[in-house]
Image 1 (spheres, rainbow, N blue to C red):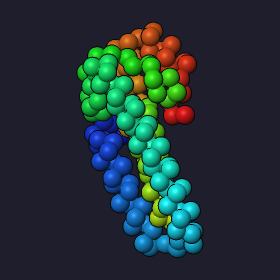
Image 2: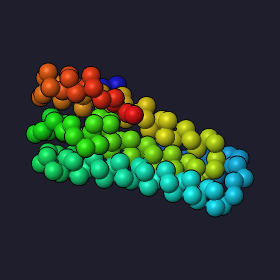
Image 3: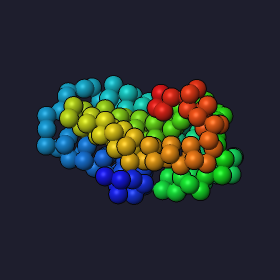
Length: 153
């Protein structure tokens, strides 16, 4: 299973999940939600996700470190400020929220498996390998940070 670690870029994985969610919504029953309620809920969740992603990316840029999720060993700085005081993975939280908003928009209960499976995959095949790399690079500083801030929320 370790051969799957750090292989699929998280945005690509999110797009695959979004497509699978759409396919499930086409094949399964949907809920009858009023258009306005569905639009407001989905939009709010998606916008929160985009804000999380942008905040994380901006923090990385300010620290002059890589945003490439496939090469965590090339990280040059441990970012612990800004949104990283709330979650260690704001960009992944953001992608999960975008998928959740998409699921709300689709109104298909089975489509909500998409964000759940995304979180499971990202945790196992992306975050855990990243954590190993960061522990190797930043040692006690990363261990202290891990003790203060949750992986997700």
